[in-house]
Length: 315
Image 1 (cartoon, rainbow, N blue to C red):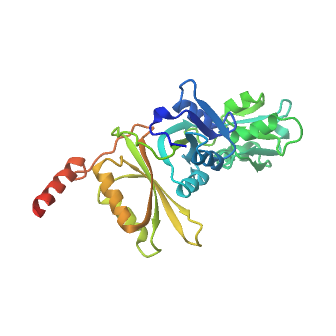
Image 2 (cartoon, rainbow, N blue to C red):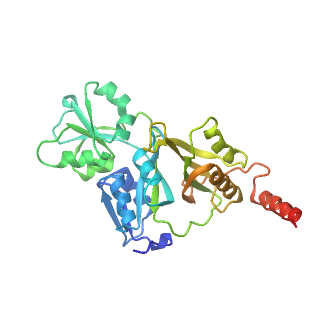
Image 3 (cartoon, rainbow, N blue to C red):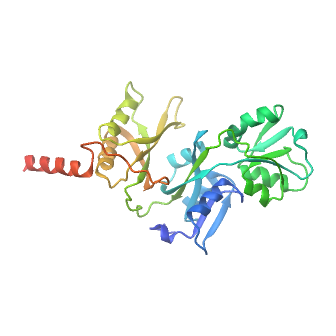
């Protein structure tokens, strides 16, 4: 199947389901056009596998939370396998409710099901209101609500999910706004197969995964210097195990700018010289519209003048 070349050619979207997840909210915010399919998948891996197989044109998946950090399933899947690229991002404020089947009193809740990232964001509330409740992991926040809505036995008494998931499943809300951090935000990325790059907007972000040639003193500093000397600001840096051996790590990095920016291009060339592999995961518009503050000597014009000067010398 030929991969879509531009965002306008995307018609079948996958997302981390089931219905009522924050991921669905992110996809609905990014794609409000009529006539397009939004298909839920049971896991991040399932959504990205369907994308690689050509069954869908793009997938919306969570990549980072302001409280809990990076989403390992997404980071690891993007770092391996057939290459994919990020073409957009969405920021979603996170609000949780505690829900249960109608008739379940809050005082009788002994087990709570939800996604691990959600549990990390409500631990304080649980400690104060349900200190003896045990945590039961689920594939997503909406999956806990969906399980409670099904007839028969379930492994937990209550679930933590988005308000929309509780409404969709006809559950009773036992408590609202139970998150420990009222300003919690999750970042979602829209991933597609490689095609035409989004045009630079001046408020862009680039994502890469870096693999070192070997583990040596100053190895990470060597990578970071490629950004620093060119005035490129990183917005996220995480290490992830490669699985090759104990102590073998790669680095997943977001930084300001677009691959067509001179300083970003020079940075990528520098990284390619010192890394065993640079996996380019796309340049795309920033959801917050933030524009980089180029230091003196790092604007495109500065690189152009320096290149012209060198060409002059060589001529």
